[in-house]
Image 1 (spheres, helix red, strand yellow):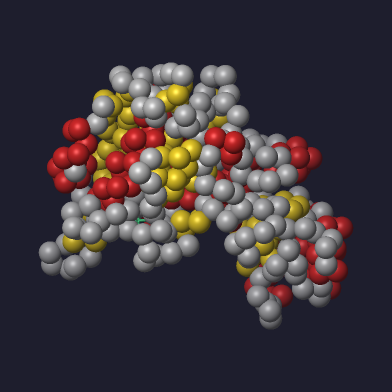
Image 2 (tube, protein in one colour):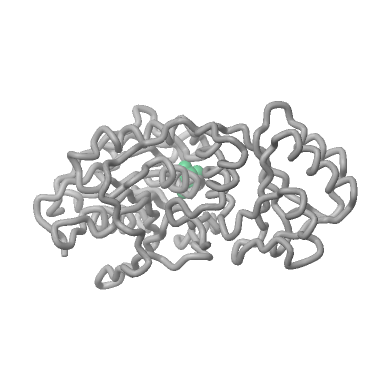
Length: 343
Ligand code: ASP
């Protein structure tokens, strides 16, 4: 399946995979890419030409920022023609945010962009990093009929390839750290890599277009029984915010207290875009299913359907960056742009 003469670019951003223990403090800190390569001699055995670009200062992914996503998107765009696929080495903590953001930023992607990392540093004997990196490279170089098999932004972790914008990190200790609750995985690696081709995004035959303007004026209001008016009002009335992710219960339900509905109504009137995203990790928001979400629908809260939290936040940043009017924003948010939601 793997064609000869493939070229893959590794983009090393940091994360546990490339960390070492500080001798004095015992803390895990990122180290440079050459030291990482040295730990995996198998990389020299690939039938694929591997090149790498490393952040001069590798980071723990908790320090990721939309600016870093732009930097990664620009590296991909600059090298797009030269390479058959891209592997991004990234910390697992915010990997799903980066994967979701890139899926919106890289329009018409027709090559694989695979994010991977590990739970244990590469220098540790029981590391999961070697398998993750080796198989991610294998997938990034895989072709059929001279075309890349994968043409989307994915996460490869612990024998599974996921659509990136459907994932979230659910476990901080297991090697199996990611879940894609509302969408099947794109491939499973056993003795062979078995691809679920019917689940792939439709291939685009257009030139890659990157979007680099992201707007982070987004707030999150996570509901809990007893949430106060004071807190709700402080979040919703934060100066300058353009959108609020309302994290609701179950199928998109919230308190029907008048003060709560009135605060939301006023915010919507002022032009703040409010979306309803469930705290449940599986399933979807159906506004109007229960009495406790009917009001939300009536006042103009928009359903995030089965979007993950990560995809909701990054989709908002991406759409707000386009400076759409409120009608366009509503339409675009509810659209399936790159496989992130089920209509
Ligand atoms: N804190 C690390 C990071 O996200 C964890 C990891 O890589 O798994 O960079």
